[in-house]
Length: 116
Image (cartoon, rainbow, N blue to C red; front, side):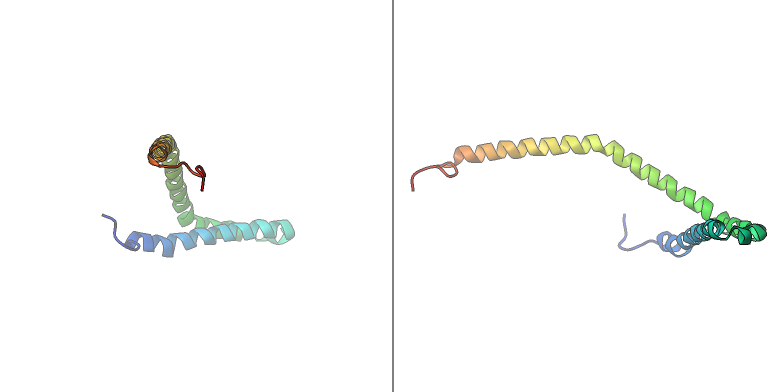
């Protein structure tokens, strides 16, 4: 049964894991950006930057991998449903066409026809 709103796990992930992943990506991007614009600063403090990214990445990397696996499963499921959805759409359109033809047969005057 699906409850209304978010579960405890959903709230926990959105309050802890996602901010850590964003912080990790921000820190890594900042180091790369600083390495492009001020390589001498990065090279002299390289050990500190590596430690910072590694500490944050210790939590963020496994969580990020889990998110990617979940996304891949979702994409695979959507891909598997494409033939079923297409067949359903064709069947629905055929039934709608048959219904329209039946309704036109039952009309006394065709659309736009007749003298008025």
